[in-house]
Image (cartoon, rainbow, N blue to C red; front, side, top):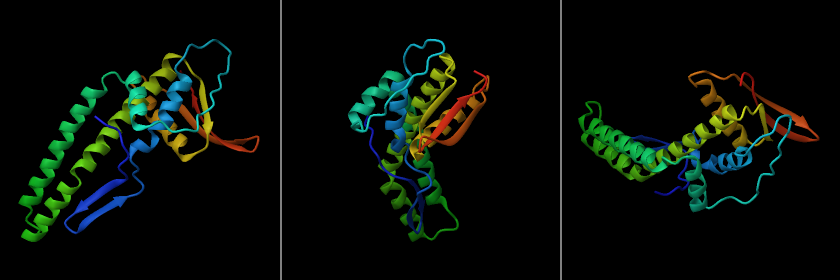
Length: 199
């Protein structure tokens, strides 16, 4: 198993392959998730505010994987299951292309080829997404378990995206937890704050 960036979500058709730049590969956020996990995964004492300086250097793919295994011990089985699901989905899409009543024989063949060309790309995107949501789940559980009232981070799109994902996981919990995501300015810096309201 490897982690590597592949790119935005592909839109595969009989006319070609396009990419939806609004659907970024979750790999792009894995370094941020690991930074937040490292910052929040420790013992806490009442009425103390903790600060963590985000490291500038990005982790290599191997280092990322090593770090993420600490938080997602079932990573391999999770990825294996996801691979199986994506393989089934690819086979299903190829079968649908073969059986299409609206496409000509040449268009069917082109669509099948386009799906096959993107096979490894689709698999890697699904691996990245599975790993990302496993880590996001751990991060959300940390906030609950340690009764962390808020997390403040620099207002970069990647931090906002990760905190928004955490917000979604907390809301979908068996006992949903209300949160609030705010963007504000302090000392000339733009910050994003995730508040946990009923933890």
